[in-house]
Length: 559
Image (cartoon, one colour):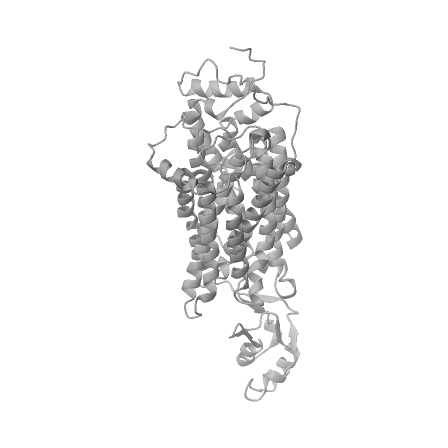
């Protein structure tokens, strides 16, 4: 055996079976559980920032008769239906005089001739659903209504910045430190938000929470994929990370149902982060990352320790010297510019940018719209979250048995087609429109889970986290725009669905231009990246052969 200080290179085929055993199985669960708070924070604005029914506040000192107190709010026609104005009232001094004279509104006085004024005394908010939200706390209505979607965009702007920095920091300093530091940031600033004294303060803190959220998610995703074997990796990236994220998402409406004050809800949401502190002593650094940095001794020590804990005999040689292969250069660092270095990598990166942008914008536009759908906002949010569970199960089956390009294209065509069909639904069937909207999200949830795994398989270890971070960064441009997408319905009712459906279909058509990673080991260096492989009829033969083949063994290196 060659000396331990000589350079060694790690290949998927040599990955020891110890990675499928006890300790690393526990660490897989630890990485999964780290994503539960992400499900809280990603959608918390649905309840923190929802706008309950409201109208101008009428002071008790107005000395108005009961008839005038009911009539002082003008009636407006919105989307073909009459409702009370949210931003104006009849002038209080005029109404007070008319009430004192004993005039009856609508009988003695034509209300259309009475002058109106804005809500100079503030607003009165319904408490039928919420005790308080940031909208009721900071009066984010009428002239300040633009702050409602902008608050969500500020959060996603933090996610955008985190996507950029987390990838580089994790590739530079390691997966584990970034995972726990960003979890601490997310937890701490969620707690500090409880003490927000203004919308500006809340938004700045929300930005920092978003910064930590995506950094934590990407680091947990990459760390898990790199400490597990290929067969277990597919399970981790679908039924692991994604399902635990969905569980956090489903827990949000359950908590919000019982905690209807926004400050109390934030306080409860900050608690889970403290539970993960002990995981620092159980989750190791990624052996793959250590090897890519030339720290083979540390990587070998982690694997031998896992073998000892699980009473597994580690092989005498864990990492073998591979002749004729490029050796890692610890001093060489990579940047997002490497994603555009060659024509093949550039083409792949641009296609992935379109796909991630589309999926993120559509996914969050539909998700954040649940509180505005007909029915109970808590039930709608829970259904929107629960529908992701079967979506992730199906994505796991796709990853297990189908080529990546076929499964990703099919899921996006399903989502795009469902959103297109909404415009054909008659107004008398609103439940069918909601069902199609949820079906569209179902397809996008499948596509999102697939693309996380697919993207991780396409790029080599030396830039994998940078690639995932950069793709997530691009996708967050879509999520920043997502809160405004549904507002396009003010121009044409079905415009948001037509726009999202078009982008989904376009992305589905572009995916076959990507390399196929199904059945290939993870690349370690840029030179090992897959060559372009067009979708051919032979792909169908591969599906049939794969389905007819015996069940894979745990140490099978194919995906």
